[in-house]
Length: 401
Image 1: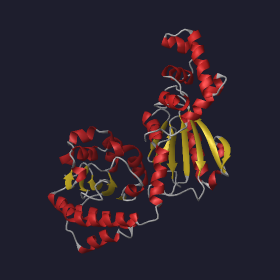
Image 2 (image 1 turned 180 degrees about the vertical axis):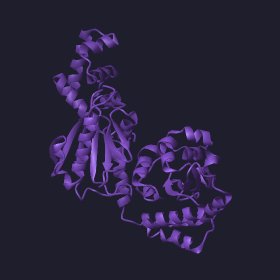
Image 3 (image 1 turned 45 degrees about the vertical axis):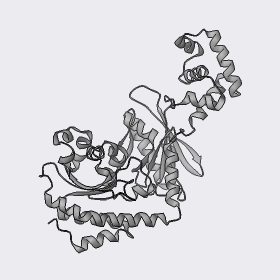
């Protein structure tokens, strides 16, 4: 037990041309180390198609994988502790107890909401940074067993140490093969960055309705726990009626190209496919989220991040949100002064001109003068036109992303 054999080494190098065999490598390592789960992932803060394509797993369900990738990755106590100690930038083996005290782990969200129920309370992992091509990706191979088992022994540490050079070589060769491809990975990465910069939430789903990716704005809405959530890798509404309607919309959009999606919400046709709209109420009482579910054509349904093929997209607008940097953007686009931009932000928040003036200690006559200046600069003639224009500006991607 814990011995590195020739067959395992062969399997590792087979992954260069057959990356789907990583699961078998992890299975053999688990068997050698008396582990129950195996996970190969990249811990770099920014993920793209190349880093996500390195991810592999053994005995980790699609639901668990989706929960980790979309919600718990940034809350991973072990990975965060390794990063804080600089361990992700070198090749080193560590056990979970050496990274995080058991008491701290058992109090954490990731343990109580995910790891405990899956029997993954013990860890032994090797970071595979090589000081070169792999270091920016920060690859990590982790083995797990349940918390009621003893910690992994020194034998497992030696096994991963012996495997590390072979794992690194195989991954380097795979990265070099990608570099020779026709640029499709770069196109996918560019698309991912564009989606992440959108001010609306975007959730991408695979054919089974599991979450493939969530952009930054969408993740903020999920984290707010105010009407929407992701449970076992699936997007859900929190309240009963909305939950049923959204589930039906997603099911209809993923089966038959969305032909029946309109039964759950308001149907419409986009690019020849049937989509549907839905308002999702929020426990906080704030304005409901506005959702559009759109099935993707076969041509558009490319694999995202080297993983599952994307079959549907959910777009989420928060009417109550004001994009950060709006006032500066209005100044850049239309030449509004800071005072004028603040007035526009107040109007966007449903304040009347009088309420805005009262809030800022300004007479209504001054507010009206500022509003006339805003109309002139923006080419609008009334407040409804101005709000329509500003709402279009809010759909522009965020700058500096």
